Image 1 (cartoon, rainbow, N blue to C red):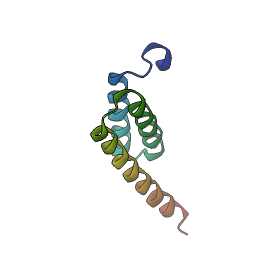
Image 2: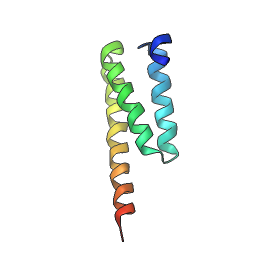
Image 3: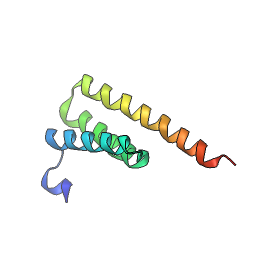
Length: 77
């Protein structure tokens, strides 16, 4: 439904980023990663702002690092 109503709009991108950051802060790294990836894709199409894209990329790298740490911890005997 979001795609139909709001499509790829700057406010939607900001909301996705903010929600992704909230999920990251709450340890929900997989969900945060999904939203940040959507955000990055939309930024590339709509915003064309390197600073925003770099910030999102940095957060994605951090979320991926946290996911790896979480998975390593789970797989420990």
